[in-house]
Length: 555
Ligand code: C2E
Ligand code: MG
Ligand code: MG
Image (cartoon, rainbow, N blue to C red; front, side):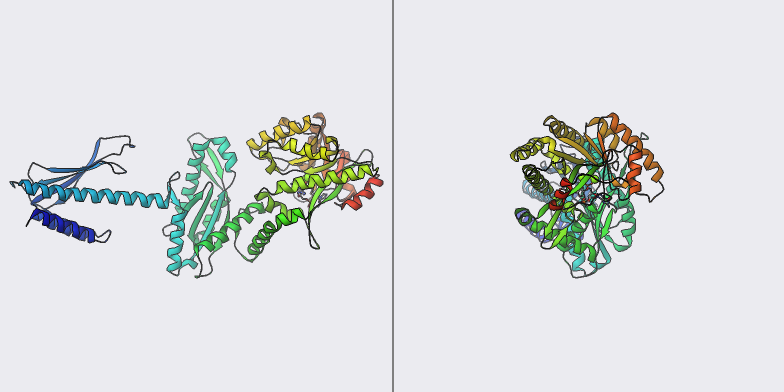
């Protein structure tokens, strides 16, 4: 047979083979190799340029062997440009065969074809890997997750599974403490704990950042939630090389065969967002309740611009009372959303708007309302008191915050001393740095700054050590009599109040509802009280009456 015919037939048969048809491939190769009197084909693989052993031979194996003894001379084909390393195919004749020039051309073409085919397969393999993997983490990505979901939906067995959307907690702090590389390693180790529970087609994938998805059999959900609640991850040999990892998750126990991967992801991510703001739980199941909540928050988001434009975010004022004099010493402006006839409390909408940073617009709107009310009262001859305005931590990325606040106050012809800015404690070191700068800037301009809900965070003391607040506002949980720690909380509160005095900070306690609580606060040295015992937050018209009659009876 003419060599061209041999090679042509070989190429045509090879191309027609379906992928992964190993026996078919072997048969086609054997047929051509027999026709060309080839005894053995072997492959020498070299490491890729990125591997440590660059260019060094690192493996050699026989690819085809007809069983006859081979001759010395080999014809070779090298494929140098393939991801994952180069390789050389070598074809050896059956011993004592004398290949003619034409034969040699045929053998050459034969192994060039094999070599090109291997190159293409390697590229496909790599492409497959890149399509379905997250390169940084070396684990599956969302494209893979969605593919598995679609497969299980098509196989009508998706209802045996639960779909999960997770966000790892405290990653900003962990990143700051351990650095990027170790944090990535820690996250991988945490993922590995989840992977231990599951077997394909169950899978875990990285969506991006610290967000992960999973599709797991329902019977594995309980083990999964144990890990979500928290697990210690050891990342080094020293005793202190341990970090507690936990997550927050939305879980959908899939209850229908008729669904789509989009719906699964959407249900879980919405549920996860609700779990994130629920504070007390680390995971939530997608159910009637979460559907309602998620629709509620979507509808709030949708109405935000309109509500802001129409002035639906209004200020209620809650008086602060000086325990030494019984006089009104200030007030806190607390936001309410007046939507149709409904008065929505901040707990229902602030967490929603904190997600999108829209809270910042609300805070500025509140500041403007407060300034406008104060300016009006001042013009009408009332003796005004300083009003506290809450500023979310979401403002901290704004370097010009202090300046922005000042320009609003100036516009209403008021002085910075008429306004107190309240910030809650921060958790991350970076936020704390920014908070320190902002507080310093505000103080330079003449504002007083208060630390709200003091004592519930983990870094309360270092915060008042490093940041010179003017006022310390003790969280209302200190007055809760439930729980075994009440006595200890009182001791703590007493000493914190003493500490604040030495730091020249004024003090105020939130949430006093009874005269006993007020007396107790007075006894342990608290200077002011803001609580239902004196007044609940009230609309501006009623607060005006308080400005007229600023004296409270302290029995
Ligand atoms: P906060 O700043 O710590 O405000 C004090 C909260 O405690 C207010 O709840 C107030 O009504 C409540 N409170 C005061 N005295 C008592 C009491 O004796 N008993 C009880 N049970 N509660 C008392 P409110 O108005 O529901 O506000 C909740 C939180 O929403 C605020 O806590 C604040 O963190 C946030 N918030 C309110 N308005 C704004 C705002 O304009 N901007 C921002 N960023 N957050 C706001
Ligand atoms: Mg406050
Ligand atoms: Mg508070």
